[in-house]
Each structure stands twice: as structure tokens, then as C-alpha cells.
Length: 241
Length: 341
Image 1 (cartoon, rainbow over the protein chains, first blue to last red):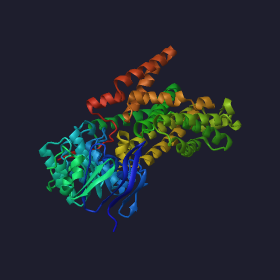
Image 2 (cartoon, rainbow over the protein chains, first blue to last red):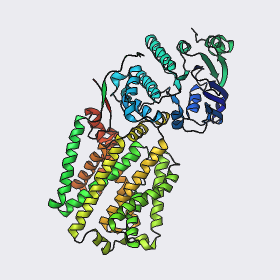
Image 3 (cartoon, rainbow over the protein chains, first blue to last red):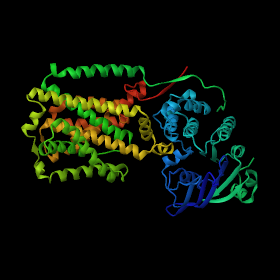
């Protein structure tokens, strides 16, 4: 059976710059995959290609057996790809609740009234319940990141793409976030997580994929990957706990 | 973040607020007053109210396009003109009675909006704005080439068609008044119903972030397309009623960018873009300024421009934006609030 997500020989150029260069990656159902790489390695671009915010230059992207390379972002979301943005994109003049509700109403294509409970549950999970009626544009950066997570989960994703949601958290907050992501994973959602905070990543994912200059640098068991010489070289100065 | 499995707190979803009940009461009183106007108001009052009605309707539609769907059209005069000309064509050439002709004129505008959308939807931002204007000019030029519709100099509506609206002058004015009123109130009600619905959630999401709307499953293109077609349909009907009242049509007047689009943009921007209340406030300011300053000619236009510049600099979301930010009031309850019990 085909993997849940397969990215095959995908390339993307911005002008003369090769951001993603013949990259292949796959994700099995139920897996949690961590993506690591220096700034500018092409991690967020990879997410934009998978989620459909950008069109690939070459290659194919498939969800289970279905080729989704040509589908627009909204259709990929409805098929089960949920994502958070590294720089949060809240619906600023809508309330927190309405943000989450919009995800449930369109991504999961439920009837509106049937999604209320799920939205309240997700706001509680992300600790936003007390802010439910506040305009999302007035949230702090950390709250916006939690809203990204709640809104993406509201679309009932099969695969959740998390783009640096742990940055800027205190140790305690980070620990709580790890527990939340684990709970989401345990509920059956497959996860691809881009994160610079390596210990958070390793606490959740079963496999690491390291990108450098738009190409695969290393892949495999998290600790083995972190200990490998080429990763050590790229990550000189970044400590793997 | 807590990942507990405790039961959810009890909650309910509220759709109305205290100010929205006040809004509803005011609207109900206003509608009753307006319905009774022909019995106690003069002909000038009727004409003014009709003008305010169609101006607010045009403003609501432009606000839906630009304020929500991100479609900054400078070419809505295309559909006023098409509606007006469709009315003349349908009544004079096809012999359709004037009132059904108004509805058909809207349909004609919506049908012509389909190929128009195919062209302008390929453009984004400022190019879209210019594209819509160019398309409106093309419609104007083409209309000027139709000899049966008065070509470039325009034509008058035959007395027989006017008679079909009403036998006496009073009867005609009253019928036209109610048509304007129905279209005005109907447009506001339709915009309100749309924004309050599930589709309104999509439209509001697009207003705030197109990228994020796509990522949570909102079909942005289809939503925008639907807004564009609805705006064309209703603008076409409004154009038909406007020219049924004016009795004379010409390409220059019917496709005039100042009357049918620039004034409308002024109203929406001044009042507050991206809300239903904004166009009402803007229309109040616009008609107020005109009432007090219309005799000053060029100074009136200069002052209008100055007001627009000052408000755009000091209140980027318009006068309503200032009020709504400070007092959290909503006369049209389109939002959803969670009340934990």
C-alpha cells in the first residue's frame, strides 16, 4: 500500500535560486516525522508545496494513492492536509472561536452547529477558551501560534503540518506543547513537524528528516541522525540533547 | 496547554447582542415609516429616499466586493449601465412590461458578468481594478454603437412604457418608490443573511487572510465569483429602476464612473469598509454634506475630497471602525459568541 503522503522528486525554484532540489519524502499513516534544517534550507517552502500554497516546479505529491500535485490548497485541506503557519495568519477581525469554527466548517465540511462542541474542545486543548470571544488580531504571538494549531486541528486533518510552533516558549510551556502534540498524534493524526528546538522534536517524532540547500541531508532514527557526522557539521554549535 | 479528558464545560452560542436588538427595533420602525411615506411625504421626499436606497444598496454591494472578497472593482457602473439599457431594450424592443423587465435586467447583467469575470478574475489587486474599469468602458462604447437604443446620444423612454408603470404621475412615483425601497431593503437583508450564514464565515475569513482561508478549506475563487455575480445581478436591477425613474438614458450617463462607482467608494471608505454598518454611516455623511453644501459647486467637491483624505488618514477603517473598536457595538449581528455557563 502506498504511504499516506509521498513527495517524489519535487523541485521548486525562485528565479535562479533552487529552494527545493529533487527532494523525495514519504510519511506512513500514524507516523510522526520531524524536519530539521538550517534557516533557508527550504523547510517552509516544502510545507507550502505539500499544502498547495505554492505550485511545484517539478515532481509529484500524492496523498495515499491520489495525485494531489495539481490541486489547490483548499482541496488538499479537505482531503486531510492541515497546516499551521510559521508566521501566524489569524483571521484578525474574527473572534478566536470564529477562527476555529471556520476551520471546522470548511476544512471538515461539517454543518456549523455540529462543530460547536469540537471547537470548544479544541480551544480548551490549546488553552484559548478564556479568549474565545476576543478578536484574534489582539492575541499575543504565542496565543496566535496556539490558534494556528486549534484552527488546523478543526479541519480534521489526517496529516498535520506544524511549522515552528515551539519557538519562543518557556520550558514549562514547551513541555505542555509536547504533551498536546503527543495527544494529537495519539488520536490518530499523522504529523510532520518543522522545529528548531531539537529536544521537543525528539520527544515526539519517531523519525527525523534533515534538509540542507533544498536536498535531503540525512534521514532515520532521531538520535542516530543527530549523531551522524554530516548533521553534526551543519549543526555545529547547536546542541542535540 | 492542557490535554485533559474532563467533560466539556457547558456553553451556548449567542448570535445577537444588546445593540443588535436596538438595531432590529430601529430597522423595524424605519421600515414602517418608509412604507407609509407616500401617504404623507411629498414627491421630492420620495425621490430622495429612492436615491438613498439605491445608493446604500450599491454601497453594500461594493463593500461586499472590496471589503470582504478583496475585489476592488472600479467598474460597477458597467452593471448599472447594462441594467438601464436592458430595461430600455426589453420594454421598447421586446415589449416586456416594465416591472418584470427590471428583474430580467438584473439577469442580463448577471449573465454578462460571467464573461466579464473570465477576463477580470485573471487579474489581481490594482490590475483587477483597472481591468474592471476598462471592461465598463468597453460596454459603454459598444452600447453607443446600437442604433435601436439611441446609439451615442441616448434615448427617452416612450410614454407608453411609463404609463405601464402607473396611470397617474402620483401612481408612477409611488410604484417607483416601492421598487426602490424593496431593492434597497432587500439588498441589505441579502448581504446580512449572507454574512450571517456559513458562507459569511468564509467571506469574512477571506477578508482577513486569503492565504489562511485557503489553508482551512475555503474555496476562495468560488466565493469571490459568487459575490461578483450577486453584485452584478442586483446592480443590474438597481440600474433598471434608476433609469425607469430618470426616463432618459445615454451611454455617458449610464456608464458614468463618478456617479455609480466613485461616490459609492467614497461612502464605503468614509463609513467603514468591511462591515454592514459602514455604508450606512458613509451614506449619512455623503447625503448630509450634499444637503448642506450642494450650492457651493466646486467647493462641495473639494470638501468631499478633503473629508475623504482626512478620514482615510485618521481612521483607516472608517468612521464605523472608530466606533466599533471603542464601544464593541454591532447593529447587524453577524458574529458568534461563546457563553460558558
